[in-house]
Image (cartoon, rainbow, N blue to C red; front, side, top):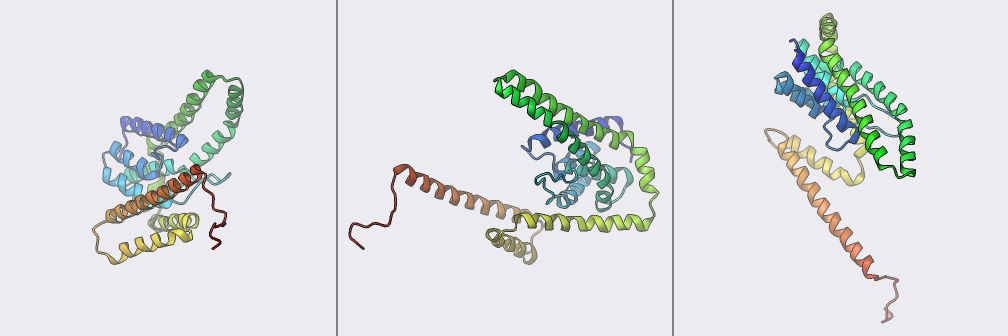
Length: 267
């Protein structure tokens, strides 16, 4: 299906907003699940957006920026998975494999910005040294708008201006190659979960993993919402328990009570 100019501009607006959030990492709107959902709304196919968002989110779940490592861009991956599936009629599994070059392109653009913006950090050091608050107010919004604007431009070019060449390119693939992309796309969520477990699977979290596995495997549930509610409840219980412990330790520390093992009764 064709993407109209209005839809292309709205997709660029989604890219701009999510690009701003990608810098702050405040609301996580830049994650594929959210980006694909909004892209599906713009394209008038929310079901496709949610399906593509679920597949791409699972695939990019464990790709984290650690140290100097910059993974493929999740924002562009979520956006282009929906766009490619919408334009070419391919399944979300095949579209996520075809979206990888665009995610890699955005990855390199992000690396360039991270390199160039080192000079911005030095400029902010000068502003801080001189207590120049107005300088911060000028430079911080400017660099955010520039980077998010480039993201919006990439989205517009890839989703609207280049949709003809993309359709011709994808439609030229033989059936066996498209099937290969579908298989690879189906495997990517497993890879994403594996990478996530490498980072998060600690001894204190194993019990939660097995609890979720038992619920998902042996209980007859229409969807994963009960598991999500259970996980949120357990997280809240754990948070309240740790907060109570921290408050008790803080109260003891504030009271000045010490425990040196000396007992007046000689016991």
